[in-house]
Length: 381
Image 1 (cartoon, rainbow, N blue to C red):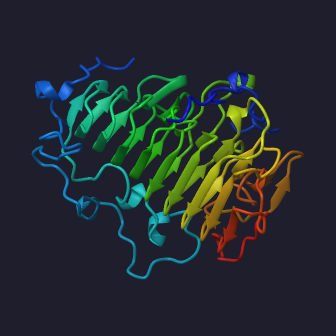
Image 2 (cartoon, one colour; image 1 turned 60 degrees about the vertical axis):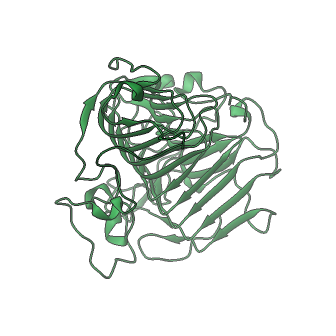
């Protein structure tokens, strides 16, 4: 089991040495807890494994394997011939997951039961079809959270919607929407995975958080928007879609947006930003749409050399605004601000990526990446 990270998350004042960026300031209570073996009392939406088989789906109305295909809503439907460029204003038109197209998060057909905060302490539990206000704590292995809307009603640093506890390996979260309480006074994260447990997110929609995901994960067909913040001045939140230290993140066919001009979409560092050592992070982002942040990607912050770190950034689209670029003495914006093509003229406020090792450095791949607006090649910066 991986050790506990020295997490450098939260506000800048408590960031444990995470790099600050010029211009950061310029962009800038839950219900009752169910018993750990909640399923044993017949709680709606929670099903314990049958015959000891982890994750057995024995509940009424459980999703079939084709649940994602059964989504119906009033959302627009992409043309049969998908758009090939300029995906930023409508990712769904290009086949990317998009809440406006009903292709990510809670399915429109879901029927939900209201719930307060939950603690899931039974291995193999299926938690589904719930409208939760508060938080969910996962303290057992092989828990599946499916068809859930979670509204996090607490705010600020240290608050997370779902907390994966030490030893709770194999959590799967799918077809789920997790929302913070607002963009200007948001919770810190949708998900804490501070113990580096195996975690999979599939068709998950996270928004209204400063730092939606903290910890390693495998992310597929998901939409993450780091559009929240909290605090002011030197205590303003660090903002990134995903933060990991000394770990592995794998993202495929997903959307990562950060409309702020600070930090990144994915920020990875060493030793929780408490020291500088050779790189040891592993980042894969493929077939995805990215935009915003200070630098859109920070694959290996604080590292002194490539070390054992690996990177595969392939077949991704980076969005940029197209009006006149304006250098403000720190970073670059577009005249009039963000437009329908992107947030900043270089994808991020400062640029595409920092603290990375480009090919031909061993273990590093940068291939097939393009600017979203016109499909032109984007070389490793």
